[in-house]
Image (cartoon, rainbow, N blue to C red; front, side, top):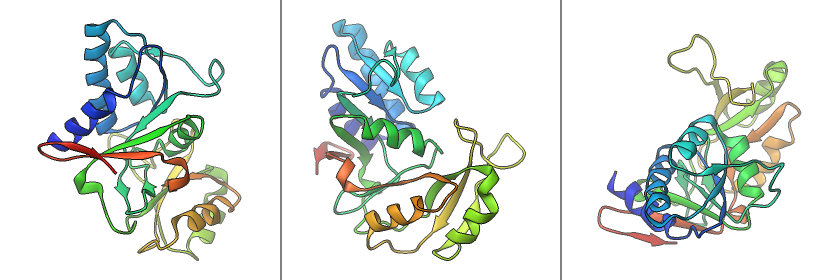
Length: 221
């Protein structure tokens, strides 16, 4: 928790009065929003936010962020998001919370993207299974094509019978490709399969910086 907290504290300092913020999803982002809420109440600043999930939407409202959308703002000042893995070149894997499509849209719409993680998320090369959002109609075809590239499993959740359904009404599969030597090429290859909505590889071209938190401090990489 200390690493997440320290990374989130550093990220809060990047938010200025009037910032239009892209808000990612996950536990680290929720810590960030709680700290941002303290600053909003303390300093009286106004922050506008486009959340990427219902989870972050509720947390943003609870913490005094004025929720807006991409209809009102087609370009955002700053995006703060977490990641499940970050490699040595700042490529990321995201989507453990199944919000990857909206997260990538919000990140792509932002002038600056800052990923906040604790140091346990750092790896030399990406290796964890990649979350992929797919249209249910295309499930059989997409999993057949993905099976040519790696090992595929449909994600099931707790508290609900059946597969995880995203905020967009789609399925999520997790595909194990082993060690990922070229994340950018793999991202394009996955997204070229008809029926794939988006995948959880966030290549370094859309990431401006990463804040890594540890027990006693945080740093940019």
